[in-house]
Image 1 (cartoon, helix red, strand yellow):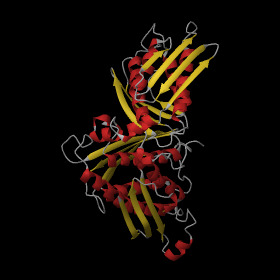
Image 2 (tube, rainbow, N blue to C red; image 1 turned 90 degrees about the horizontal axis):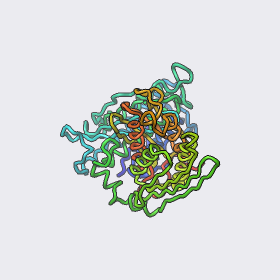
Image 3 (cartoon, rainbow, N blue to C red; image 1 turned 45 degrees about the vertical axis):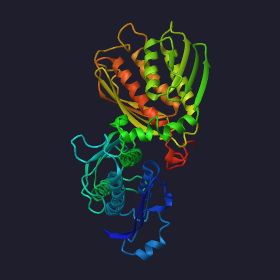
Length: 467
């Protein structure tokens, strides 16, 4: 579906070529607002919402004819920074109206599903967290408050992105490129109002201003895609829409198996001898993990089972020394094997977040197969409630410090960005570890799934993850 507005004069700006086309990636040069970094952020809708958007702004200084001659100046409306508030409001207003039409169309045609509100009304919600190596932002969208298009009755709720980084402290960035991030709330408030969506954007963590903003736009884009699909990361496989898109009867399932993604690694040092075989085949070949450390076996078995991947690990290590070499080397081998099996990652869903519980512990993992490896977490390992030195208690085989090392080795060698958020601390570190493994596997399953709508193209505004 395509929604298009020819020319819209508003707040001193004329916005032309305004369009939003579902399941399309529009040329990035079709976005030209006069603030270059803002254009780059809007382009995230193309790559991550799979909604092709375009918009061109002219006339911000009252001289439309002159502005048309200056379209090659991608930062023509950056100064003074105060007028970016009007520009962002205008862009949010017109794009929100078109996005609202797309949402209204999908709601009208969608069957009732578990992504609807539990209160019995017709509102649907979607939540997504986007992980970057120095930021994690959560976006929640709720549709149904308004009709979409024009004044759709939506609203901007929580908007807690500031400060934009920690450099300089305490205020963060006032300019990113030429964009003034202090005015971003104007864009999202206008978009919410005209689209009929309720929007919440919350920074969970983030020290880099550029990445905080990028994470916000990507989280919004991914939440919008899920809303249009009738899916959400909070209901997961309970949704009929989710099963139709990602389940065992879906095109995604069939195409994922057709890729025949498999890899094997033999890794031998003076300290360990490891053989790993991994198949991304929905666990048709089963999971067998034998590292010599039963607790580590349980963690990686849980992860593989939730990821629906077949995994065979045989490790003979110097466990009579301690658990360090075996734990580290097994994490490295699994990560290398996974990265080898995934290849270029073109056509994959790439990002997902999942939550799981074990005992009293609840953990959420947000993952991106980014080729920019980074692990960030707030798990209470050093400060765990029971003061445990070993996962599972005194006398067990895996030390708490090596749990973190195992995850880090896997993430770094798997070339992924992973944020782990401890929602609730468990009474035992083992519960926290198993909840993290469970959520990690669930997120990985959806990240490595083929999205047939991408037709083999990479989910990135850069067009590749290889460089």
